[in-house]
Amino acid sequence: MEVVVIGAGPAGMIAAIEALRLGSHVSLIDTNNKPGRKIYSTGNGRCNYSNELMSPEYFNDSSSKFVENALQVFDNNKLKEYLETLGLFTRNINGYYYPNSEQASSVAEVLVNELTRLKCNIVTEDRVLDVIKSKNGFMVISNNNSFVCDRVIIAVGGLAAPSLGSDGNLFECIKRLGHSFTDMYPALVGLTTAGKKLESLSGVRTRAKVSLYNGEEFLASDTGEIIFNKNYVGGIPVMQLSSKYAGNFSKKSYLLIDLLNEYSEDELFVELSKRLFSNYSSGKTIYQALTGMLNSKLLDYCLKTASINPDKKASVIKPSEINKLIEALKYMRVEISGNLGFDKAQVTKGGVKLSEIKSNMESKLVKGLYFAGEVLDVDGLCGGYNLQWAFTSGYIAGRAK
Image (cartoon, rainbow, N blue to C red; front, top):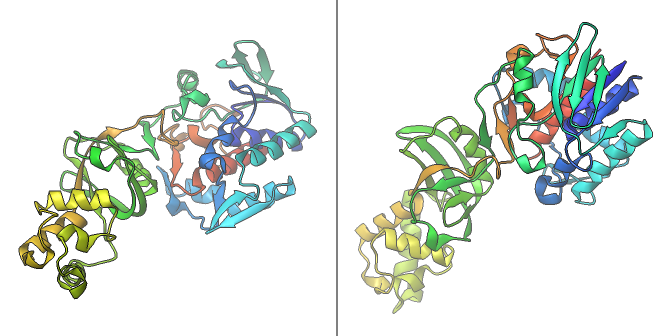
């Protein structure tokens, strides 16, 4: 059995390994200068490859059972065991699975070592241009080679991080083979802001609850550390929400940020009153009485939003002013103009329609054609879920007969 795997990311590498283990001769083709290039950049170079919390609810897909069925075949525990049998030591950090070395290269290297041991034909710096279905199999044509094979596994990724090879160059070929795509958007990406309102907050990190609205429609919310920049907001909560925002561009889209989510409005009124009117605040300005409550830039911003003079004596602040400050602290509104695009996105939302794919990742339209990883219409949350999907779908595609 001759198998060609297109794309040497995590999905393609594990697919090639499994096909080799079943006795096939495998050629693994990639545009980069070495296999596993995408893995090196994951998790800020640390490679959070999976998570101890694993269920379909952490994924977005157009079929409620597709990811669920796949995880029943190859889940987080099986992936952890799989990589450990290849020599990887795993470190569990608050439920997130990392290589013990905390180097993404460790994950890539154990996979490459196994590919080498199994005598995979690894072809790098070669771009596949076309896949042609013939009577008895396929012809795969690249810049430098042509391959005749019985099966093709397409694991070329989506449109995110095009500098690493995921630029959609094979999508027209996939369409010619009869497949269709859902709309594709950047996901797990920062959201850009309208105007220069946040320039004074550039570089500020803070924990907050972030809610995303499209006009009056509430889309989703998440809590964690967010990062302000002069023209966008980032951090894991915002990146999670970006997947919900993808198909909902509107001039009325905005984030509502609660900077003190641990307090209700009534509790915050009591807390602020204590700080402003206590004996320790005697003679202090409003700004001095509230120092340490928030990052100083954020405190300045919220006082300005509430039209409160920070140099005014704390003892003379009015209850109505405290209420305005509470509104500024718990309902910080940031208008959204878009996102940072595929260049900065971690994953792609959308892809080959799952209605056209069997549970073993084979095309329902073309016998012997398989898909794995981000090229399919599946994306996950931050926390190792997208790498889990890559490995899960690649494992299944590689073992399919």
